[in-house]
Structure formats: structure tokens, C-alpha cells
Image 1 (cartoon, rainbow, N blue to C red):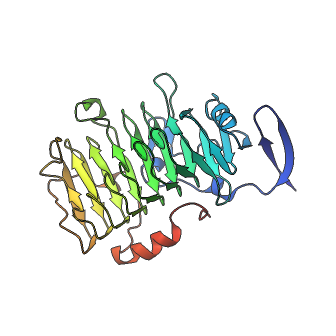
Image 2: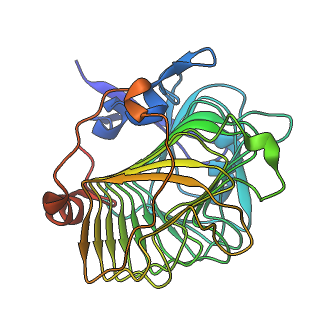
Length: 320
């Protein structure tokens, strides 16, 4: 039986034969897979129809609709600002050329939650603010196999009581404020939230915040590849609890900040184990952190295997 794919170009929709998109069938792991807050894992827009968009207007329309959608992004889509993404959406790039440029995606607003969202196989470039912002209590979010190029502010920020998020197999090239976790030193409402897994990401010539964590506990950073980093790898501050394991740090002057604090932020806690350090400084560690295995099972790769695995598998056009 032939499978039909709905292709919509803002205001018009037609049915054409298609094979679907294999990326939609994959499942989230890490914190995005945990049964919590009324959700058993992250399914995105699987319960709704599939549409393909080629314009910023179409992307904004379906991302902001109060019903489930799988939104396939085809080609280069230019947007002017942050597009609000509300609950039960999958936003997935088609092939290896899907790109969002000029703006970014904000998951959730103060009145419309961005829960149960999947973002996969997209390149982000030249964002006027953040490329992706997970905010306002969004939970169960999976951000996987994307590529981030420099923008005006953060590449991927998670803040304001958001939680149960997995960031996996992404490539960050030349980014500065790469991944913020926690809104600010004074936003203590983040305590008890910000449970995030970062695994198999490739940080290539990026500068800082991989991540810069405040308050979150536990934050699980494993099997990531850090190469030619400008300032530092991981910063655990404001009593955040980070487990960093099986990562490969190459040419990283300060792999980890924690018990001494960082900049104006108070100290955090960090457990480091089974990491590899090549032409890199010392990973500052101390304190105890809740084990991520309390929440989910995972397979830790040897740090020595990380560069080959991550460079072969991270980024766009590589989803199975």
C-alpha cells in the first residue's frame, strides 16, 4: 500500500505519493525518555498529520497550532525572529539541505507550553537572537542531529524551569555562547528543574558554554567531542550537579569549571570520570551528584572511540 504524505505550502495542501521520513520513527533517549510530569517519553507530533513547509510563514503557522504536527522543513527557510513552537510538534529537516536562517525556534511562551517537541536534522545559521530556546517550563524535548552555526546570541539555551531534555548528536561549528543551562544566577526558580542529557555532540572550534549550567541536577554530559575550544568546556555553577563522563577533550584549555565557580557565579558540583584529555588542561571537579542511571539506562562508549563515532554520526543528513 502506498503511503501518502501531505505537503503544505502555507494556504494550500496537496497529497502526493511518498515514502515518509525515517527520522520520525526514532525514539528519544536520556532525560527526554523519562516517564515524568504526565508524559512517558517524547513523541513530538506523531499523533498528528505530516506537512512539509518551505517558507517561514508556513513554519510559524504549523509550529504555533494547538494540535500535533510533524513538520518537515524542505530547503532553506528564512525567518525574521523567533518562531514560537507549542506542544506536540516534530520539526524535522528533509535530506541534508534543510536550514533555518535569520531567526530561530522558541519552545513555549508564558501562556502556551512547548512540551513534547522534537527538533531534528536542521541547520541553524545567522540567528538574530538564539537559534533554539527551550523556555517557560517546556519539558520532554529532544534536539537531535542538528548543526549550529554562529548567531547573535546563544545557539541552544535551556532555561526558566524547563526540564527532561535530551541534546544528542548535534554539531556546533564556531559558536560562541553555545549552550546555556539556567536563565541567570538570580533565577533560583530553576532549582529542581533543568534535568538535561547532552551526549555525542561535536563542539568544533566553539568558544564556551558546553554547557554553562546553573541549578540543574543532575545534568548528564557524556561521550561528547570537544575540539579546539576557545575558553572552556563545561561550567557547573550555582550548585548545579553535573556528571561528565566518557568525553574527549582535545585542545581545550579549561575542560571544566566547578568548585571554584566561574565568572560571577557561585560554585557548582561536578563528577568527572573516564574522560580523555589531549593537549588540554585539568577538569576541575568536586562534590557529589545524583547518578543519571537513577532516571534512565544508557550505554557509555569508551572516550577513545568518541572522536571517530561523533565525527561520523553528528550533524545533519545522518539520521537513520
